[in-house]
Length: 365
Ligand code: ATP
Ligand code: MG
Image (cartoon, rainbow, N blue to C red; front, side, top):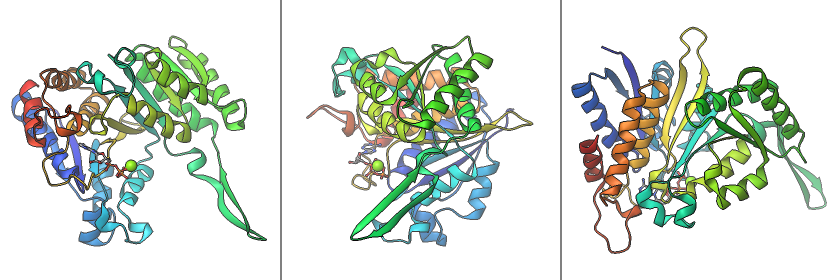
């Protein structure tokens, strides 16, 4: 039997409720499909702080590092608003990203036909949309040095952030984009601002050279990131895979998210470099939404983002492509049947609970 290790970090708020619905799928796949998942579970975020004064314990960091994949729920909530900065709930996720070197953040924007009406755009613009935004996650202006606020005197201050990218960082994110494009529609659009930024010039040069050397079978286009943002809301279906830096990716993936409706629908994956020996990538899968303290514990959370993140895990960590397709189809079928949690229901329409939504997807799977 296959041997696949999963480390579950449900976290706070609606994280545990959403994770429970994934647990059911894991049990089903083990019992009925012989999937051979071995799961272990840890704590991250506020619950970890309450238990041992850190956003994630060293023991759990070790387990996360050893596992084939990490499934992460959500962290934080008003209860921990005033804990010290270094141990705030979000520090747990940042530590995982940093220690596992998860440099590639994958954010699909899929518009299920049944939900096209609830997009902020016209249904014909988004119906059937299926694009993948790949954001560089460990470099760029969020991490570059110097990074400081200098007191200039006379009541004046100067803030400095520094955008830094090295060739290897651009090559490895481009490599992820081209590899994944091959499993999709074979098209990559690279976005930067080469007209005003040196890092944009290097980004463009490196992506172009890397494409020519290794991936010339994939169609590559370039767009300035501001124009890209405009095109993303004008006609998003022109794109397949978009690859961009940390800052632009942060913004463009949020723009793309709103094309598809509720936060409760959106999965994500963060991948590291392939291991030299096994070729396996470290990986963490999480919903885009946060811990939603306003609805936690009420059975109202939409578990689809967490379940779709598990589908990404099947696809990218275990090459269980047929199973990933089936799970995504199960989600689409449940939506086609009109089954809705409150966040995606039309006003006054009947709704189901978190558990009922999970059950319905499991039944379709
Ligand atoms: P964070 O800073 O952790 O991202 P946030 O407050 O910015 O937190 P969320 O926690 O994602 O964002 O919540 C934003 C809004 O979306 C809330 O009103 C929340 O109830 C709603 N929401 C988020 N996730 C879900 C979900 N899975 N199902 C239903 N509603 C959700
Ligand atoms: Mg937020």
